[in-house]
Length: 125
Figure 1: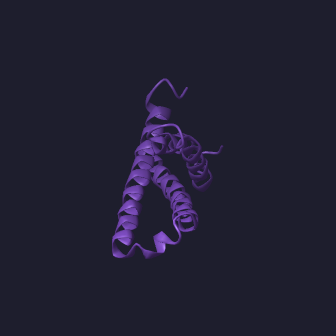
Figure 2: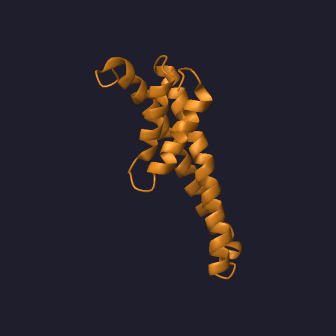
Figure 3: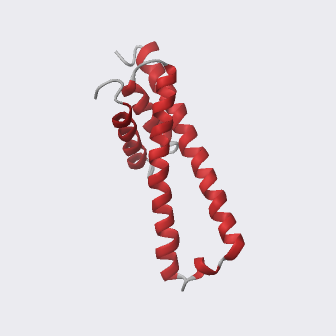
């Protein structure tokens, strides 16, 4: 992986987040760290690529969440999600905001840590 290929490194980090999220707690940190480690540069570059990785992972997460919430629960509960009204909408908005803060924030932190590991520890050599 080439240093400074931000989009590729962010996608690799997002894929790592998606793969690890099923069984590793705080998986966005690991995906962001991988992206930040691959990106190189300074701490700001690691932070930026980690955040981009988190946004890509978040989009995928929200699409899956919407698909499961609307399609499968709609069939299983006889259209219940369509009749939840304002409370249901509020729940989905709060869940989406929490997911955004969780995934993007932890991925950015991971990007910073990945850059730190690459340049300031013996682990990266």
